[in-house]
Length: 573
Image (cartoon, rainbow, N blue to C red):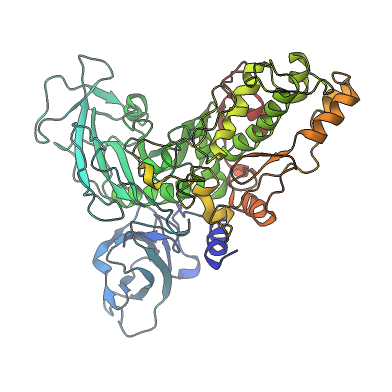
């Protein structure tokens, strides 16, 4: 494994603890800490910091000899000062705090009473996700703002765009509808009001900020009335904000590679949450249909939350929410990066994208095997078979696979398509190999014959910084392994299948190669990739942040098909 991959993997496993609580220093000591993000993972050149010092002390704050004391003001907690330190260069800086009295100001040449090392990364990233995945298609020119215009052409190769702030308001004539605010200095006649969970009654006007970070388009949305509220700052949060922050995520996975994303997957203009006073933030790389990589999603969430805090202030708590692909994005971020969110609220639950793929690969091998034994089976097109081979009834197939219906079994098997880089593969009905977003040019796409060095559309290759790569091929290493698996053991023990059927199945089921072609031998996973899968959180363990925060699971499922099955809820538990 390369040093870059190792470093990325180790950093992923480090706790992203965001300090939120203030307090007095013990025994008159001087303390400094960051509020917007961990001190080792600052982005964009600024960080919100808090100093605790004895009452009445005069404080001088400097960074690299530059006096930034003017950025600090009295904090909410006793004997604290909070300030937004800006202008940090990339790399390590030291924030020094010197203390004096009103009659004897701090001496700039004296040793600091407290110091804090911070490490700043560019707003374009990356921070801990490893080298940028290439190719990468920018989509700022098609991303639509609330007023229907777009962000415009990217400003650089990192898909950067200008930051745009627009206002929308909820009307009192069409319930739930938002319209662009025509003039930020006057109020429209059809403006609705809302009373937040904190008891504040305010005009239902939403500030929507759109920009780019970590090569993604981000948005945050918050109640803010520009006609009466001061400009947002961490020292003057909007009156309508109830101090609740919601990280929202999209859905899907197949097709989620090599693009910035032209849509979010879900809107931050959630009238119910905004009406209660919640603030929301989102990013195109938190929509798995754009980027099916939980490590990049966690990094992007971390950066988005940091920016929000530096713009509006520290929330009382942050929850992460989503459905289907948004569910596993919420779960994996919460578990792999403890402290980033304080609770999870999800629906159509999956533990992680990899679990779907691994279950799909096993099911796909079974559909292939059954097609060899039952040529008229609905699980596959007609294929030749040997009269000496055993056949299986649909009831036996369900006993072996554990699914409720044949459709449920086939739908699950077809989710192995997210591991298949070969275009236009003929297989089970509904199987779609090499799923691509149409914006990715054909010339960039992998083809084993036409373009063997092209980008590979699989969940493994899009997260190759964690899995590692095969130096001979450049392909991502794979953790899938079915050596020693006894397919149908429960069915054998229950009498649902015969010993002859069990032996034939396990002798002939085979495996898949790096291109998802069927092979006669079982598949051997890469041991290093398997270890890093667990270490990074790409396979959910529940042993990180999820162990100490609440999970609200809307236990919806569809056992007959669609692969949103009840067992995923129990896997999460």
